[in-house]
Amino acid sequence: MTKAFYLTTPLYYVNAAPHIGHSYTNIAADCLARYHRLRGDDVFFLTGTDEHGQKIEQAAKAAGLEPQAFVDGVVKQFESLWKLLNISNDDFIRTTQPRHIRVVQECLRRLQDKLVHKTYTGWYCTPDETYWTDDELQKLGLGANPLCPTCSRPLEYVTEDGWHLPLRGKNQDWLHRFLKAHPGFVQPSTRYNEVMSLLEQPLPEYLSITRPRQRVGWGIEVPFSPQHVTYVWVDALLNYISAVGYLEQPELFQRRWPVDVHFIGKDILRHHTLYWPILLHAMGFADDAMPRLVFAHGWWKVGEQKMSKSLGNIVDPVAVVTQMLADQPFAADVYRYFLLRDVPFGQDGVFSEEALTGRLHADLGNDLGNLVHRTLSMIERYCQGHIPSSPSVDNLDVVGGQRALADAATGLVPILSAAMERIDFSSALEEVFRVVSQANQYVEIAAPWKMAKNVQAAKQLPQVLAVLAETVRIMAIALDPFMPSVAQSIWEQLGMAAAPRRLADVATWPGIRAGQRVGERRVLFPRAPSKPA
Image 1 (cartoon, one colour):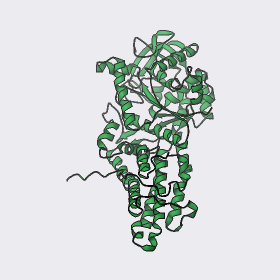
Image 2 (cartoon, rainbow, N blue to C red):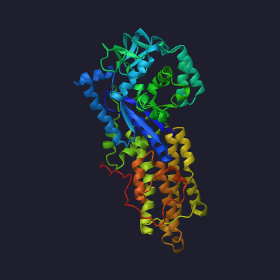
Image 3 (cartoon, rainbow, N blue to C red):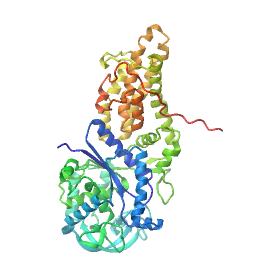
Image 4 (cartoon, rainbow, N blue to C red):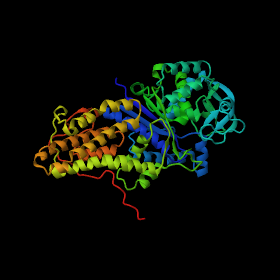
């Protein structure tokens, strides 16, 4: 049985509309999923929504709605955004779905003999639905009336009875050994070091598995303790196994688990790298059945500030795509390109309209768009719209840089593969656009418009245009994971709409049928008309 490549985003908490951070994670996951499909892999890409907990209860009450009606409305906004951004998820799980609730309750039954019933007294962040112990806050230098270390909002001091899973002792020792033996479990390396540093100190003594129903009514009932509901973070984490058939579809689960990549933001690192593996370990998952990689990416900032609803500096991806980029026929792809190219994945980025339009005009308009437009225009003008035949790479003329361009284009597969293995989207795009720049330089050196006016040079013109067409074909394949709609448009403009795009075909030269008619041309990245002074 061939295992699927399984990747996930976190479940997004639906107390409010989605923002740029949500879109960043899903675009990254979508890019990796599309890349693996381009390779021919069986892919299962999961995203979804986290719909229980105290914060949802409060938001629903403020909106004058029942919790289920409230989350149903917000979930529609997430689903609409994923459609707008061309997100190709294979499943969308909601924690209010019966398939998830059944698995959560069965997992709690299986954990019951490992749980301790006790009273917790300490700090709780309702916006993050996260517990903080006095020890943790003191280590961070936070004294009286502390603010949440993650979101900087006030913590509430609570006393709650419930069921808890021990973290210290055997569980912490096991996780420390596991992470030392699997240094690739957490990426980037700075996050791995952060987790290892946490494990060098005693963890909180217990992980809360439940919350009292009298404090939180909106949650999954604990099957052996009806006066409690499942702690929302435990509920959410279990989606990664409930969505792939755990306990209910063993063959499906065997084909998809373990997950290959969990994409998360760095603010939920400890939930996914401390609590999640310990939960799995407590349920009997062996070391080789643990998630293979947790990749914690950075934050997008406005200026020097992390985006925050309370600060009012949230970037709305819908507004960016439909308003800021309203003049762009492939606005979603422009947005995708900017997020994936502008900063190395894992680091923090700064969002601004100037940076976005800079990438649009320089990389996309002047480089990629210009290459596609003039290549197809010249084929239309000088070859009556039919793509000339190209010799094999070995038989290309060295003079004029044809062979060098073909080598650069056909050699992209191992370079792209190495970058995507590292989940380094920025570097992958940099390599693709290096070939785009090389192709544009080749156009300037060859000057087909001059060749057409010279009887002798005109004999070489078809081969020059064939080389450019083949390069454009390869760019369409290489860009497919990053800018799927742009890649499809280029493909159609080349007259290849009926042909599949496959990564292996990057190394094929020639890959276009000689004499193929180009399709209808379209400007990929039009310049907005100048505004009056």
